[in-house]
Image (cartoon, rainbow, N blue to C red; front, top):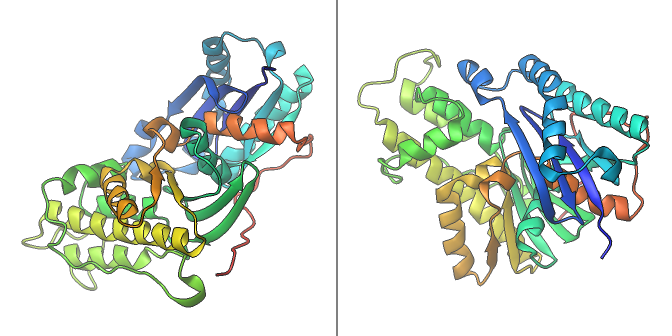
Amino acid sequence: MERIRILGIETSCDETAAAVVENGTEVLSNVVSSQIKLHAPFGGVVPEIACRAHIQNLPYVVQKALDEARLALDQIEAVAVTHTPGLVGALLIGVNFAKGLSLANGLPLVAVHHLHAHVYSSVMEHRLSYPFICLVVSGGHTSLYLSEHPLHYQLLGTTTDDAAGEAFDKVASLLNLPYPGGPSIEKAARDGNPAAIPFPRTFLQDKERLAFSFSGIKTAVLYHTRGKNASRQAPLASGVSVPDVAASFQEAVVEVLVEKLILAAKKFRVKNIALGGGVACNGRLREKLTCRAREEDLQPYFPSPSFCTDNAAMIAGLGYHLFQKGVLADLTLDASATARRKVRSL
């Protein structure tokens, strides 16, 4: 079998990542330089800080990925890079670096959609069969996709306002828990009662039934922890239990995510379902989805945490299929903060 090795580059947000993947699934290296410590004092990602860190770290991360794969650039068939969606400044750094590698080394350039790569990550690890529906849920995105083959990604629904991961970060801040919010909320929730507070579940109806909305629950947590008309900077109200708020908030968000994914699978008569994105690491989300999938006779697939969070292995993996089909970019490739949204109607 011919060995086709793709170098992947990912800089869509605050992770500087590079990887080498062979034939779309065999990960030869997967290097990620985290920026969590840089952004933690601000309670969220600061784009300018992220960009500076990408500029500083990317050459070393790429070289480390090649070294761990025990390959030189002349043994690479193509360079794949995330070009959309994400922070435009961060994306530009990765795109321009990839262009430089392509031009200097005569390597084909492949442009990869960040969310499509998250969907593909389950295929890399589990070899699940098509078609399947994947929920990509992270700090910047909450989207449902139907995938019928490696190059088919039909958007079924996305968030109308805030992403689930952003809601986790904002609620963690309200509870004076450290950034990033997802792991902090999950840890605090272990000592809380998920039924203590009836936070709202926004399910939406009609044409938006597969869409998401998390702005309402953020406001509900603010009112519960600070009181109505109080500022975010006000102290916690008397008697507020941080573990109970964390557990009740997490349960409300998880219920919406799981039920939307189950609904999509039933509507499109698909048996295989998967998760992707950083929030897919959440243990309660995996637990509840496993239970509901069993009840509905569906088969869930969960990528390991290193494939859930932003990484370049998924970029190189999907890049392999684009390369094989001759879907190449040129030096006019630009970064785009927002990808085109074509949502399939039910």
